[in-house]
Image (cartoon, rainbow, N blue to C red; front, side):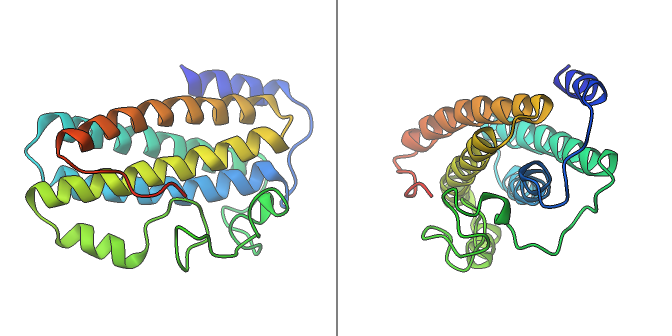
Length: 195
């Protein structure tokens, strides 16, 4: 339903975002961000027998894969490449991020909340309850970073369809963060520091 509304709004707007616009940067970066969330969710889904966690992983896989397709569709409709020569997060330069500079919570990373290669390796190697806890910790932080990016777009864009989609991400990921914090507390663990 949301995807249909976004497409209708797109076709009713005149003009398209430029290659260096916040909208194009958001679509590209959020596509990469979502791809990692999907990867982490596949890892967890195959490691746990907890049906609630398997359901959460499935929801993240399906929702974020679909959203990633919408982001890539926007770029295609706008006549823009799927990737750019600008560094990740350059669209938020001067708005809380240094346009490719590493963040304090993701050493060597470029987007808020992204798991490092070492964290991804640790998740892939973990088993049982340890895998569940690490997944929840990493995904809470990942979602917090996604919310930060979506809120950044809301501050920078006046394009209705992109703003509506960003607000949907803020609302849905905040709801999932609350659920994951409950799952984590039930396992006697705490979230990682927010990005």
